[in-house]
Amino acid sequence: MMWARLNDKGVVEELIDVSPNGRFHESIVWVEASKSVLIGDVYENGKFIRVGCDVRAKEKYGILIAEASQKIDVLGDAIELGMATDDEQAAYTAWRRYRVELTRLDLTETPIAWPEKPH
Image 1 (cartoon, rainbow, N blue to C red):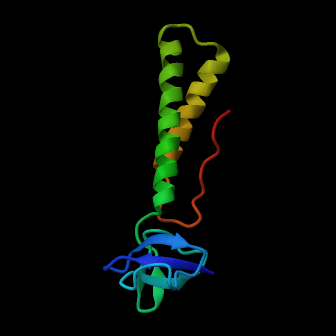
Image 2: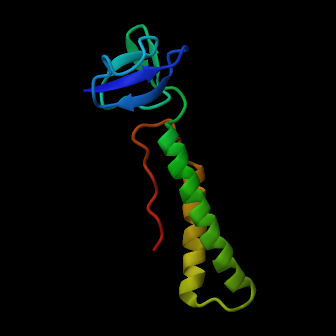
């Protein structure tokens, strides 16, 4: 069993796996939640509703886009300078394709079908 801490608008701000009873100030609102509930979900009429995207998904997306962009920049330099090997040219194309696939993700879906990272 999980517990979700709600803000004054009913948005989940924290999730814990121990009962909050007696551990926090009584003004803090905690609601029992299933393991599928995520930070950012909204509690309304006794149900959790998924709106927007998961904070963790946004963080992962940012990390993956940054990594892809860094790889593309370095490989692009090698290509532009005429120093790229055949493997580096293939990697450049693969990383660019991967970055485009990332930008096409719907971060509000559950589960998110993350594209496979190039090798």
